[in-house]
Length: 89
Image 1 (cartoon, rainbow, N blue to C red):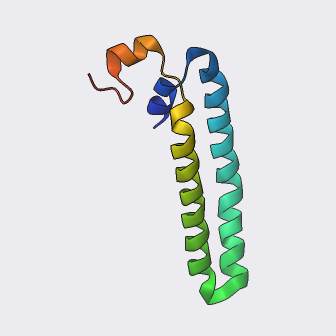
Image 2: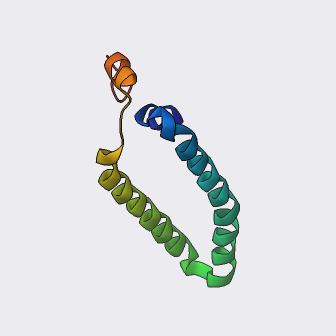
């Protein structure tokens, strides 16, 4: 997934965006497990449903954001001619 993301970015923006991607995934790995544990501990039997719905909501929001901003990504000319967007010829 990281290689697809990197291939979509212009070389000038690649470092910044890859940094944001790494930072956001690190923050998610720190916050989500304790949040899920807290939810399971204090909300009882409904906790699995709440965690599932929260996760599903986050995935839907990220999908919508990805689809709405995908057209704004610039594909580098050399990479596009050689590989295509997803690496195929």
